[in-house]
Amino acid sequence: MSTNVIYMDNNATTRVAPEVLEAMLPFFSDLYGNPSSMHSFGGQVGNVLKESREQIANLIGASPDEIIFTSCGTESDSTAIFSALQAFPEKRHIVTTRVEHPAIKNLCENIDKLTGHKHKVTQLPVDREGMLDLQRYEESLTDDTAIVSVMWANNETGVIFPVAQMAEIAKNRGILFHTDAVQAVGKIPIDLNDDTAIDFFSISGHKLHASKGIGVLYVRRATPFVPFLMGGHQEHGRRGGTENVASIIGLGKACELAGNRMEDENTRVKTMRDKLEQGLLEKIPHSMLNGHKTERLPNTTSVSFEFVEGEAILLHLDRFGICASSGSACTSGSLEPSHVLRAMGVPFTAAHGSVRFSLSVYNTEDEVDLILEKLPPIIENLREMSPFWKGNHPGMVGGSQCKCSC
Image 1 (cartoon, one colour):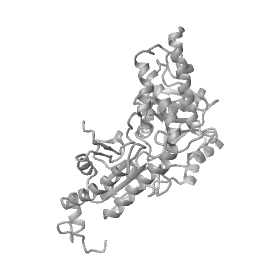
Image 2 (tube, helix red, strand yellow):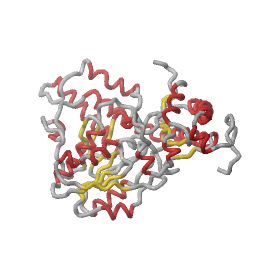
Image 3 (cartoon, helix red, strand yellow):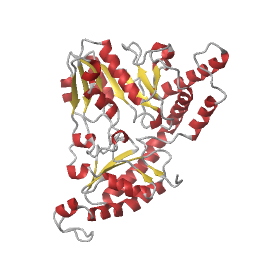
Image 4 (cartoon, one colour):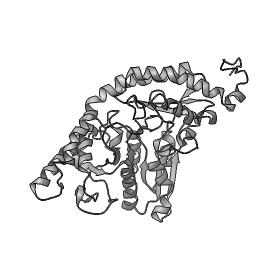
């Protein structure tokens, strides 16, 4: 593998921080005991798990006993939804949005098959900037609504939703509220001690420099809860299965690091993101930002380039060791435009040519400069070969700027 990788696909996954790997290693070798065992060899592992639970709780402003370890964000999402439906079997309505991650989107679209009951799902639309209409949201809630599930921040555009306000609206109607916060944790400050109306909250370790295969579901105290995975007494009977000890230790360390690096994420990383975004929009004609200008994660930008294919852009970037994405990693391989961009009303000629750059604290300004150097000629060359570009811009000759009024 090349060592000259410029990795700007951190919303898909992140590198494991060196400090996280170091914290994990002993639990693959010397400290291999089962934390549920009665003997002291396993008990010492159980004590370290308690410390990790505290580290995670500290990052999001929760209590350690509100933390349930899962295998990933998807399991956390499913657990929250199914728990609400089982806790309130008389309620058959779910409210979500059209731009959710597939972990929620596909679950809600198949909920009838999975439960054998007649359920109704309301998917709220977004505007051209990816924002929700709160009045429309409030009007969508009914006495039959069991749960609302709205992501904290969109994985493709970085747009941040007002989940605290939405949760309060749901709470006033006696409705449970879940947020998939996978992209937000570690990038922006979160304090669930303040946002007291949020009942369920999902985390995925590999989005904040921990390992893959570990997640968390926060369940607020006194929230009705039905386990998704039945089994042993682990997690106080709330999630069966022997704990993924090494990954839990790593996630705890990653959360500690994220808290210490929050300022860097929201200053230096944001500055690099803005430089990259502004440079691309200035250098490349017929390009557009996808998502709200300011209500976004500090590390994420999604830019569409008209009349070219995003997959072709990524292949050319890959030749320079530049890693980006055309949207969610969980929908890669599909020839259809992103469901997020479609919901936002991005023109067809631009939706296919979208590229997402998602930075991390490990990126540098030199890497941003290289992308600004390499990407404009890539777009120009692809447009010269594109029948869509020539058809819409007949004045284009050999890459020269057209004279039309567009």
